[in-house]
Length: 399
Image (spheres, rainbow, N blue to C red):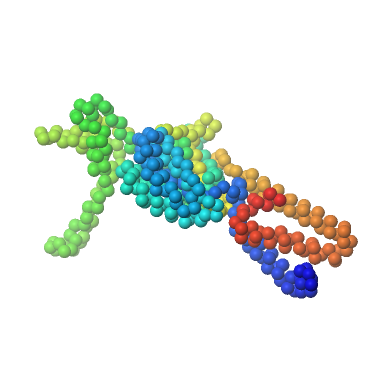
């Protein structure tokens, strides 16, 4: 008895099996990832560190070298690529073999970073070294700008950091949100070399004074047991904490002399509230703008994520101050949607053609009913096989 006769003689079993295959395919369809391109590139984990004020050569020697030495040889690693920039930033991309679990890979890389941290400069350890898994392709770029130039780039950048970035990062499918073309607020101290030299100070002395006096401390509680005071209330001591305004930074004592003289920061430097970095600038149609680059989390649906991003931005735009607008400057999911639409049209065209051919050759609609019903079963059931083997929905465009 042939293989086909087994199902012909058992029509109920064949019908139940067909329904089961169709249901499994329909359920798998909702979980299939969709991206701009099918997943053919190996998974990657990006390591980032910053060494403010250091050149690219110093970053490569003092930061990249210890990290690369420890990360090298991590399980399932193929190769890694590092890039040190002149603004003190370091990016190491660790590439793993296809099929590697990115969660495990991220944990392993983070453990190797912990081994390298004792060999890193203090400034790098203080800022932290991060290891993140994300797609190498940008999912969307949202541009913020002021059409009437009511706000400058610095204000727009900080508005994006405080009001937009965290909200967008919480959307399902978003791996990371980066700020491009601008920087956050920072207190900038411009030292006067002549004045610093006249009082016998160095830049290191100023840095140490700022670190020691710009602190958030716990001042304690007054009248707390086992104190002997008969008062009935305990009072928490409130302190100012970190400095906020330029005038407060100007009062920082850099040096005191034996005769009672005091050298303050305002005596040797100009202090202003500005940007953390002026190395990059963003523009949109010749207007100052800030770009939010949104990376997709691996294994997620790009179309669904992009749709959620658009909806969220529409909601956030209702709370924008007057004179602030946004525009989606880069959205490759539009091409993905067009590709999916083309696949759907192609599937229906193929179904219609197969039905026509079957009816023409069999010359009997009742006889052609079984082959026609097998078409959606085979098509929908394919989604279950694709999900089991880790393919994305984009692979349908290859057929």
